[in-house]
Image (cartoon, rainbow, N blue to C red; front, side):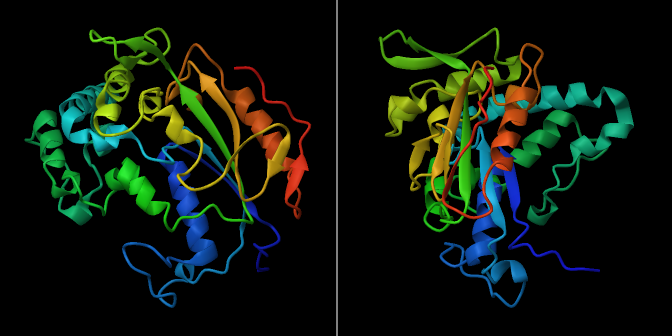
Length: 305
């Protein structure tokens, strides 16, 4: 079997939500290994992934990604009961099929001693047991909740870099509107007609005074029900440029802000808006990228949403 020349046949990676952070870290590991990671540098001989030197990624696109973290993760201890209630509701609805969907009751966290739901255990008790795990304690880093926090995302940006040979593209989503609270302070509230009901309490929390209360600006209030819109544009260190038909390598090409699309609507979980045209147009942009060269002018226009 012929071996594919990955450095010639480079790939495009597209990640939604935390998937954007994941593909960024994958690109860093391939190119540089784990050097600089706060958890320690892995032995490059233990796995080829940690050896670095693999210039295999042509572009990375992040969609609604908490590239600078989400205040939802910061405030998880405060909103945890709401999340648990929503999770119980969603799982109950999805489990209408009975035993065929029993897998929904397994958090797949055996490595931290969290076993699947017992047959005699209620759904509420199971979810409470999961959330009592030390992995949800503030400051616990070996779990995605840390990477999703603003502190964790900032820490990861110290070693997960904006690589000079990769094109970076970002899309942001927003489904809240600016308002004032009883003390005339800035807040953001969910668009009730477009944000799906389960995300509205979370959108209200992110849009509340929580961000300024922990030292962030009110720019962090606008959100899509899961992630602050500001956080989606780029990581905390890379250079941001607004896409105008000219794709620039080694920089964050900000494509557009998709308004009145919540965190799930942008991947098609919606009845009021079709998003296929957004992805088709972006695929054309990616296809137009040169194999070599630092920039290219694209004739593909982003469609109205």
